[in-house]
Length: 214
Image: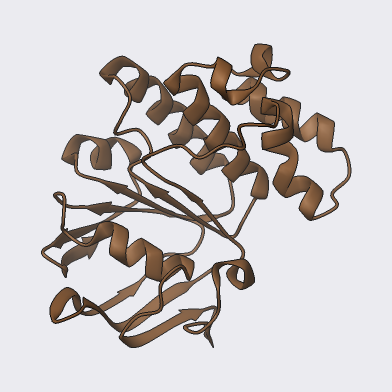
């Protein structure tokens, strides 16, 4: 899937959050949004997802203008800094929820496959509240991956985890991204993380795109 941003700008009242910005994401590859806090990474990802409509510019998917379309209409998966799980549902049901919405076959097998890859198989029958923070984030990641969306957005998903767990999960995600067929955008403040994830890097600062390339 090719995602193209044309002269995207965003404001909050009189304050500019994104200055006119052009970006074409390489299809089926990972692009890392690298920048400090308040660089505009989350704001840009919300526009990509369809959570917010930009004040100016267009969002194109495979050449079609989707600027006015909602996140539901765009078939996007997104993982945030703060993991979001359905607290009244088991881990297995959390992972299975996007599969059931699409009425897919072999749901149990797919849930088990993702649980094994993210090392949460022993917790499938538990509720998210019974798990550690790192385990809960794995559940959120598994649910996003289960959606198998053509565009996957990860907004600093590992930032609230300890260093050792971040390192472990980053390696696992990198392998999953390499094996997938989605266009992936991953936001981080860490240059080392951007380097380790590979792919392409878009450097942002104060709402501006400074550099983009492999």
